Length: 97
Image (cartoon, rainbow, N blue to C red; front, side):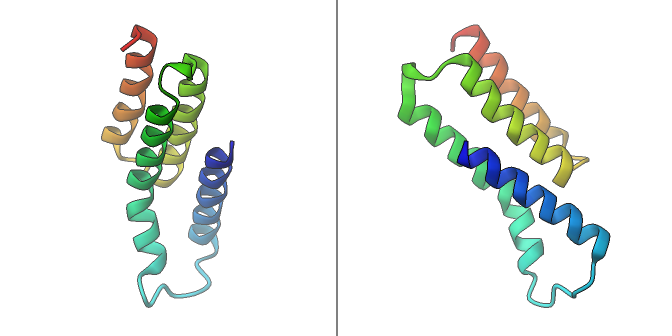
């Protein structure tokens, strides 16, 4: 999906920036984007889930949450709360909640 592609591209960009670190983030733009991006993507996914309602399958929910989980592992390696949130949504979906 488009959302998955954006998460992949942003996490790859972030990884490249960490490796290269060839320009200074004087305005704090890169840092700001990375700090707010998990919450932004999580909110987008929740909006998709609400909009699709009962029509969305567990497979689709898990696919979106897996992309968010992969994104969080690449960009926020120590944030267990993000990991727990993604897994919690998947568990709720599998329970039919």
